[in-house]
Amino acid sequence: MEAENSKPLENGTAERINESEPQEDGKEEWLDVLGSGQIKKKVLVEGEKDTRPQRSDVCEVKIEGRLQDGTVIEKCDNLVLSAMEGEAIQGVDIVLTLMDLGERCLLEIGPRFAFGSIGRAAENSFPAVPGDATVFYTLELLSSRPEDELESLPLTERRKIGNRKRERGNWWYGRGENTLAIQCYRRALDYLDEAVGGIQVEPDNAVDDPDKEEKDNLLLHILEDRLKVYNNLAAAQLKIGSFDAALMSVENVLRCQPNNVKALFRKAKVLSEKGENQAASEVLERITILDPENKTVFVELKKERMRAKERTQGEKNLYQKMMGTKSSQSPSKQKKVDRGSRSKLPWGVVAGSMAAVVAGMVAYRLKFI
Image (tube, rainbow, N blue to C red; front, side, top):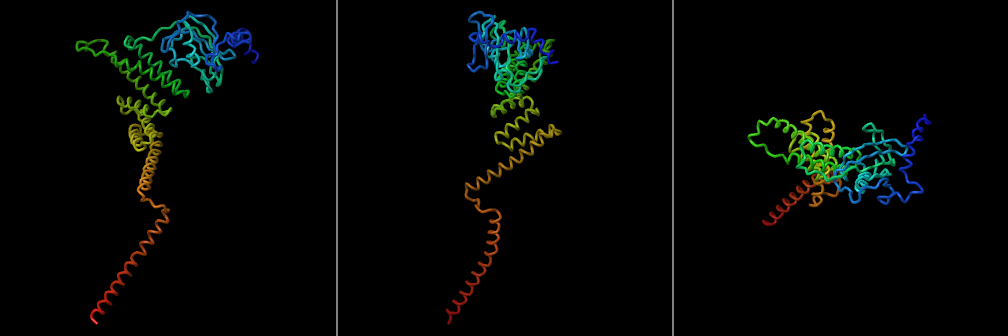
């Protein structure tokens, strides 16, 4: 089996991989893009000078990615993506803006700018990529143009692009690359928010427009897509500690869907991280009413109540310390002192009263002798 698996490499694949690796006699042909050896580029076909795409330009590329053993992990003859917007692995994204129109090049991309230490699961009929793998790409820039004005795009196209960026954000989020996920989510909102905001109000005489119902349904779907993006954006912002931004994102959801359990749960998480445990408890209590079968919420609610109690007690102790009313003695000793004081105080008062009475009687008798 081992010999059979190696035959395809000997029949041609190995030659292709060797072509895409730096050779001893051609080191000067490879450009170390970042100076760290993580992204290397070798031009095979020169492109048209001064035609490099700018950030957000819509590019069409022919792309093929392989592992060092020749395994194809990605291949597309006309992939459309926006430059420098996280729609490809970082190595490809960076090099894309360094290519001229019509240029074809080889890339050697280290794990840091490819699929990292966790690799990639099998997807779209392509096999998995192992962790810490160096990958080799053949990339050709077929076309490049500035992105379209949002107002000029039909609703269906805006929704399509917005969801493409949302799904890419989900991909980055699943890999723990939260900053890249946030970048994709924000760009998705550019399309989905503008899609709704840019709609013209229908005139009264267009009530019977046969396309009105279809358009209304489309707007409803766009709204739902937008709320999904805000919910996911909040999750990514929460991961990087942007609590105020995450709270704004979930509030955008709750304004339209006050009973959105996922948004409420993330709001509770944000409030907890901000130290507002009582407020977090109140949000979780609301979820228990909306989703009484959700055991996770009950567990979190118990934790938040304990945190709120501890926080209240801590604030009380601090206040007592600041006011100088808190005894430095332990509670047990304080109780003993209190009991001793209560037992001794009445006898002292009684003895003093008796002495005063005796002294008064003596003085009275002396006065009349």
